[in-house]
Length: 443
Image (cartoon, rainbow, N blue to C red; front, side, top):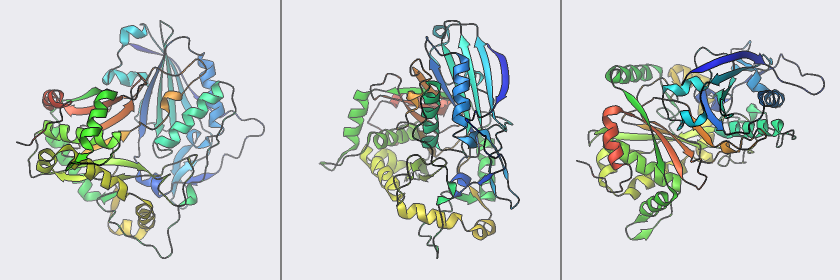
């Protein structure tokens, strides 16, 4: 796929009336500071008729006047607090073309060619970048990159809905809640959980783990494999996961699917039966913190559950064993856990003395024997309508990090799910053979 860049420029917020001050600095809170310090990329594809590029651009500029942080720059204030300057320096907007029709490049598969459909993720100061790629058939692909420290998936999806509203000439509603300073430590603090080894790790330990992982696996080829799970299969999986000792225990489709993938990938990796394996699952705090944080909150309020099992137990026990571990771990990340984290993460002396850094990073080539799942199942990403209809394809970009999974709703729209699963090439054959099997056993 030969993508030709036609133009690249910086666009800035479009205000009605007098523009606001451009000198403010918004410090990051403890949830911003502990999340992934990186850009993330998404791909949208639209069939004709599609809106003019000028409509997409103007709508984006109007939306940036409401979501000002995206048009700013990350930096430190005079006290050394990292955050975002509301300086309106703008976002990158690229126009591109492909000398082919959409049917010629479909299906869009997770591969290095996907990287040409969105702006670069390296050495970028802009917190949002947009690339509008036109195809000969009139279709358009919109590649979007955004910095995770500015917004989590929930907040980003609210931004997308607002962008679509602006493009359609509508009033942006609801408006974002822009207050990152609402999370205060208690006095006295009450740290009831161990956050070292969860949200934080020792800098030295993390450095050594990354080095070991990357050295061990530097010659191995990683393939990002897309798997489609039909609504029928998901129903069977949920029923299978929810049956325990002759009794029914209802688990969610998400919990059932994740437990299945945890087992299948662990089996495919051919790990030592006595080894521990862990899966990192993001948990949105908006509906867990008391009093409840509004859905319109713009920023990050995500922590993680870390269900863990021995490989032998995970594979020898029935599916409900893994599902229960996952369910219990997610349930534990409740109001008490979030407030314990806030108290711990606000203690700069402890963080400095123990030389702790966030455990969230995307610098590893491999997560084995562990996994991470990024679920976009509940976010209305498919509702990004620039004025001529919703996308028929939405997917993550190409992330060849072994063990880092993405779950998205299928474009079919019937409740089925697509999973993007990076695996070593030598493990992929085994995975394909058993990915729809419910009968797994250890050696």
